[in-house]
Length: 535
Image (tube, rainbow, N blue to C red; front, side, top):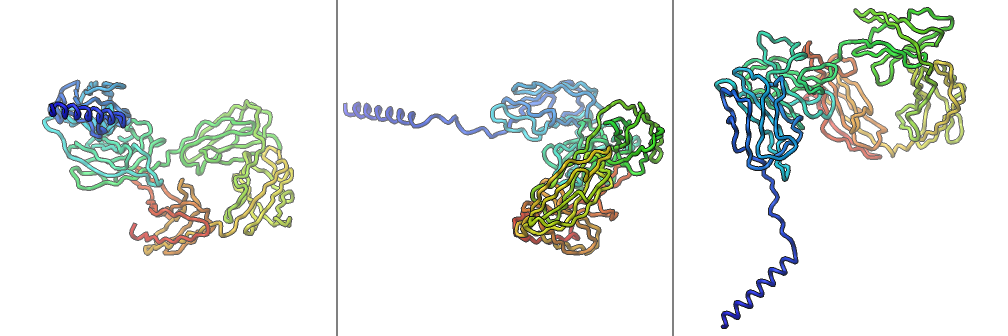
């Protein structure tokens, strides 16, 4: 009886404990799934030889789905006709690949899914998954490794295509413009690449930022990088490819009327030595002017309108010699519009300027007045750039100063005779303590021609220096922000970065980014030393 009573009490306590625990919390559902899916079977088997199947079935240990399959999937060698891969848009424990193309004999194929296969519940990636088979007696197993990065920019775009062309009796360098490669891969979201399952031989290695996603080089759109010499595989070398935009072959677009008194000539490539001659007979007092459109590969032919329904031009450049007739239909004309990109605070090293949408035909300094905070007149000079669209107004300034620029009507007269209205601009200068200084000691024992750029986090050029010796630079009056140092190895000493050319086997000039961020604060001085002999 005592044992029965004890059992009864223990049962009540157990029930109370269970009830109390239930009130305190809820089941967690177990630990989170962090495991990637696993392929359990493949039919035909992985790395099958003498492959003749038209369908491939891959089975997994859990439900999977695709993520960005079109971007991630790389088939090497590439097929002319895209294979049908199912299921799409739903979860399944199997993947089926239907091959539409006729496969090459004695060739190893790789279906590289990248990171596109994820489990259905947690999205765990089956990283770098690929299915390999061979239509011959064995599976090729050679590999090459390397990296592909932008030759000029600090950041490299994602998804760089790496192409491998077999060099045989049919190979020419022009093949990259019209045919797909023998092997390929993609860097996806890194700059690192490896191409696997390659047969021994001699190859040309190419990197493309392939905007058309067709594995064919389009020099008008794509960036390219290439190995200097053919590659013998097998190899233990690790390859570094630098991507760049080639200067495209010159091509002139058909000219057309943009506005009344303005004909535009679009072009591609370099415009040097381009001659535009108006053949149409013009009246007395006729005038014309040619300048380049800002940030566009376009030349503007400005002219004083007269009674005619068309203009005839002769355009010449090197071997180009062509006649064009431009029909004139519009009655809309550009009116003079002036903008001041610098307003409010002005940096000590900057110059105040105005930009115009039409050429500035005449400047009258007597109708421009500059006064300081004591209303005293300030001397200035005006400088009009060759395109007649940018007018600099240069004057001496003091720290913690305030300046007023007044422009009376007709201070600036545009190409079509229209002038400005009354304009006023207020500018202020800051104290020296509001800025920072960056001092750079550059060791250049080999006296290489260098371009030293100080750039912002967004890659905008802040200031630029040139040197061919060891020297010390002091960058003063810098806004408090983060900067980077970019060094261009200016091999031909033309004071600019030169790109490369694949057919001529010219690599772009080397660019080095100093890896240290220059985090400058107001009234700070930061010092750095760079030894270019080790770069």
